[in-house]
Length: 147
Image (cartoon, rainbow, N blue to C red; front, side):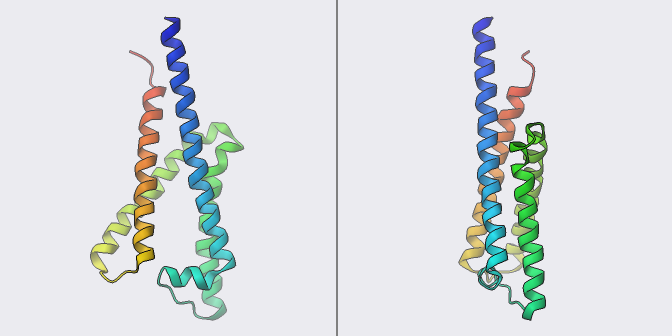
């Protein structure tokens, strides 16, 4: 019985670390994107096919992309300040990336002429979603009481 409990504890600790690493890497990615969108809105908007109309367009891009991606980074990094928020952050990440993959898939079916950077973003969104589902599945399994 002690061996089983020790194994369950080790599995739980491994899943906690895996979840933390996943949230850390994804959160830092969004933090980097937020900074990039904020300090170089012309460059980042051009990479994704936007053209900014003067200061108003740059302000809007910086606010929506820089601000939103910064907010996502905060949600994903929140468990490093408040560990009890880990499940919230992981579920939020899954909901956000599930939505991104859904809408990206629809847009790629509707709009055929997209650049290489957009394709790389689509791949990253899928990777983040699938990795998140794997982490969520493993953490849910270890959190379930043994039968």
